[in-house]
Image (tube, rainbow, N blue to C red; front, side):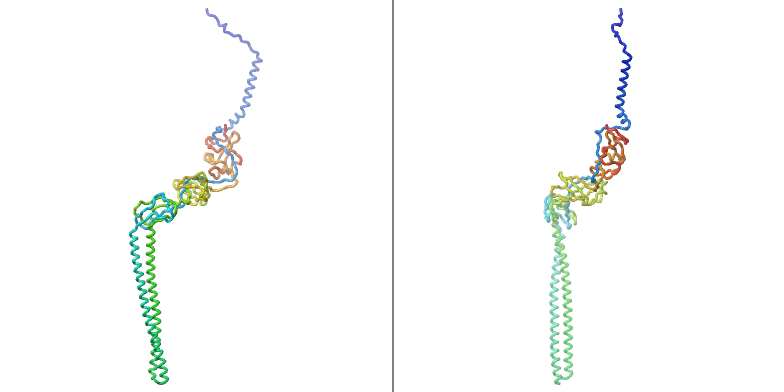
Length: 422
């Protein structure tokens, strides 16, 4: 026989309608309270288009002060003086040093052998000796001709003296009527003839003297000219011994040992270790901004060396421009050839400038807009960017001192007018 379910039934006591109504009132009050508390956040959430996490952003404040526009460049230490040594003539080279050897000034580093030059020197020396002998012979001839002219002049002088004596005797005789008038006139003629011969001999002697002096001068000039030829060849012979122009070390050997070289061919380089410069590779987009004598700070071995740009290459290689920096003072720092360095080139200084730390917001915003942060909200503002340096960016319009901006990339904001930072 199936029993009923009366044993499982529970007696339900009906509640009072007043108690049921009180529960509904309390639930309504709680719901209204929750809505009132959540309404500001809800309203703010509705006003913001998107939201981003605070830990993904970089913020910085706008400051005012002196703005230094600069750029960064990498480079290496190079010798300020690294002259190359060239061959003076064609010939065979005999190197006396190896790359890396230390050398002194005027130390012989190589020798050239030139049989043709040696033979030419001997020929010209022989010509010089012949010219010298010819000059000496000319001097002897001059002495001989001078002596002859002097003899002629002396004989003319003696004849003139005799003619004068005869003329005086003839005058006395004619006064005493011891001789005829014809004999007296003959004595007068002899005196005139002797006087004329003496004058001609004297003038001829002077002319001959000038002529002989001219001939000696001509021969002397020939000797001097030949002496210059020999001296030049001797100089070329002495330059067959190649000397180091500066004190330092041998850099690169540009020719092989015992090879044949031509005139004015580079043989080797000598690196002067007493003076260094920095060779910097500046990106070509800054080529128009850099100039000679600009201040530069070189960081090497944990220290900073100040210098100035001394030269700028006129060409671009691999999107970079090569510049040379001359140090103001390097005595206190040990430098090495080809040592890597980083440099900071100071382009210009501006006083009283609004600026902010450099960040990706310039590139992502195109320098046209940024986001200013107020509590947990970032709002888009229009800005105008000026010059930029390694660490800061100049802000011309759109901000004031103390404003806090987002300096990280703005790509996540998707150009929203207002962003919630959570």
